[in-house]
Structure formats: structure tokens, C-alpha cells
Length: 111
Length: 115
Image (tube, rainbow over all chains, first blue to last red; front, side, top):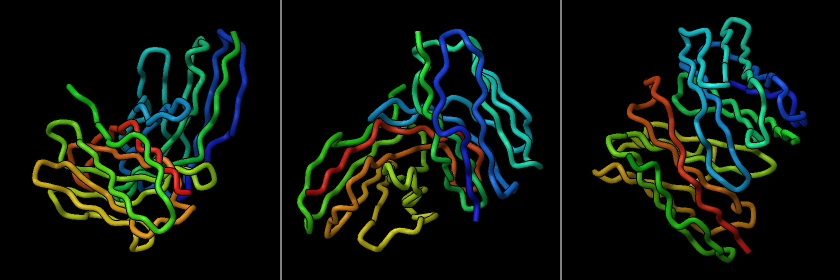
């Protein structure tokens, strides 16, 4: 059974810092991995999608990597801003087709 | 291009009642999935529909059901509501079915409170 773990559960950093969020999964047989952002009480916003054949994806200040063999992904956020404060969720899509989510990392960027 | 829309956004129901939630996917998307989000369990998969057929189902009791119409709009129904059904219900759409690698896009969710 696929399990997704995100570390740390919460993170507080000063504005301008570069930071890394971690995601690990137990079964390497995945179609893709998606990183999402969720603001309080809101839906999920897709940040990056990495297909199983890819090693990384970049969008603006965000870079996500995928190491399928070790069951790990990282989300790198450069030059963090207060507007980046949110919960970041990692999800893998396996053979059953549905997304399996981690519990998320709650990020707080202090001005 | 309009995103995924969900109605209603908020609902308050009493134990024992039933509720129907609606989801309209992004135009052209044929797959609709439903997820339940609670503080304790996080995001859990309910079911997925593709071309009006249920393609996959999560580990939820039979009180949770859904359907998809020919225009890809989907509804989910929860009968005999329990306090534990209080949650944010999220709908996601994508182009393809369960074997595809397409990105999933989520709606704003329906906040259901059961009293």
C-alpha cells in the first residue's frame, strides 16, 4: 500500500530564505508526482507535475525533483516571500489512478 | 478558460439527512475525482468517474456514492449523514482516465458541516 510522508510538518522561515520541502513515498511504481499549494479553507492549486520519466520540473522560483528509485521528491522554493505562506502537499499517482497525498508541510514566511 | 467549479460552497446538515454535491470540470476534461479532506485523516480518495463510468473507488462506506453525466459534470451523494462526515469535499478534473499521466486540477471545495 502506497504511503506518502512529508517532512517537516511545519516550517517557519524569514523572508528571502531558500527552503526545501521533502516528500517520500513507499512504492516507486508511480505515474507521476504532483506538488500542490493550499491556502486556509481553500482548494488545491497545482504547482508542479513531474512525470515518472522526468527528474525535475521548474516554474519561476519553484523547482521540484523526483528520484523514483529512492522514493523521494523535493520542492525547492527560492527567495521565499510572505505570500508563499500556505500548506504544501505532495501527491503521487499510482497504478490505481487516484492521487495519494501526504499530510502536508505548513509553511510560514515571516516579513 | 474556467476552472473546476463546485456547488454549493458551504452546507450545514443534520445527522441522518442526505446531501448532494456538484462538480463541473474544466471544459474538455472527461475525468472527475472526488476527495474528502479532514484535519485528522488528510486528503482521502473517494471515487473517480471517466466517461460516465466509475473507474476507481476508495475505501469509504456505501453511503457515499456518485455519478457522472454525459457533459462530464459529476455529483456525489452522502446518505444518512454522520458527524464524522463533516469535511471539505474536493473535486478534481483531468483529461484522461486512471492510466493517464495528466495533471489534476482541483475546485475550491464544498465545506460540509454535520450537526
